[in-house]
Amino acid sequence: MKLFKHPFMKIIALLLGVCLFAFAGQAMGEDEEEDGGTIVFTKPVKAVIFEHKIHMEMGMECDSCHDDIFEMATGTAEENDDFTMKSLYAGKYCGACHDGDTAFASNTRCTACHIGVRGYQRMNGESPDAEGHGGGHE
Amino acid sequence: MKERSSRHLANITDEERRTFLKLGLKITGVMAGGSILSLVSVKDRPAHAYMDMTGYVKNDYKPHYCMVIRQNHCVDCEKCKEACVKTNHVPSYGWRTNILERKVDTEDGQTMTIFMPVLCNHCMNPPCVRVCPTKATYKDEKTGIVMMDYDKCIGCKTCMAACPYNARYFKEENRAIDKCNFCYDTRLSKGEKLTACAAACPANVRVFGDLKDKNGEPYKLIHKPDRVVWVLRPETGAKPTIFYIND
Image 1 (cartoon, helix red, strand yellow):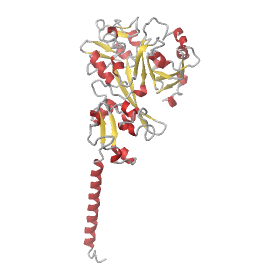
Image 2: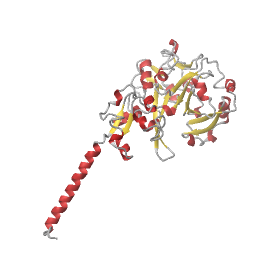
Image 3: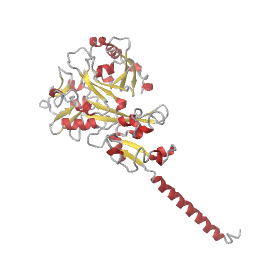
Image 4: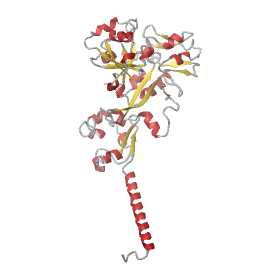
């Protein structure tokens, strides 16, 4: 009780608490950004999306995939000639889990990961139907 | 898709039913508000019955070029479009083939993306040919391909309005309508067996070949027992020769 002799001190303490909480929250936010974010593969085909967040929420850890299945550096896998569906079916890359056992098989639900040129354009703020070889069918 | 297939069956005319039965296919439903017809290969129907049917088979096309699209394998990589553009000098404002996209709700409450390749359907009863005032567009007597004679085209765009598939565009460079011709001038006539799009597809989505060749892939895919096959906008009566399947 003697700690907050003056009502003013209480307010100070409260403000301090709020500040500390806010700082902690910010720090957590930074950590989330460091989970790798959204990865979009454009080779060998446009485009495949990988969300770190979704996979982390399933309880996976960084070392579930890094650096064994995938290098940390973005774009490393795409430089490999064997970064293909055939490799996935053989249990490489995404296929390490997407084998129909741990996660849905690589030869099913194609568009769960393949967002296509249209999805890629949308991510880059372009409209797939705006111009070029797009164009609606309606 | 399959669970949506039992709707709007009443809208199919008897004539349409008979036509597809003769093809050895049974109509099982109409999807997407009547714009998509679904068919199942009839098990007890001998494959040779196909040769007797009117419309799709009573013709002299040899080979009768067609395309079967394995829709669920399309991931919109658009290598087909790139190959088409390069092969047929398609300008940036037009297309001969395109990929459409739509979101559908799945049974488990999630949303699924479907990519649908589209191109000229090389119809048996092409509305574009019917309306062309100069006979610039015509159905090739040998192959069934809906072709263009650019010199005869006056650019009136009536065919563009008539096409149920939006498969035509006005090409400024030619001052004429341009469209898919199954790469007849650029590839088939030079001995190639596939269209540029079919050759470029990494997932074998576009299966091109002779509709009458019983040993050919299109025939085998269409006539596999219990296979659901559908065409786009059957209600127009255009009788498209681009067939869609999920496998």
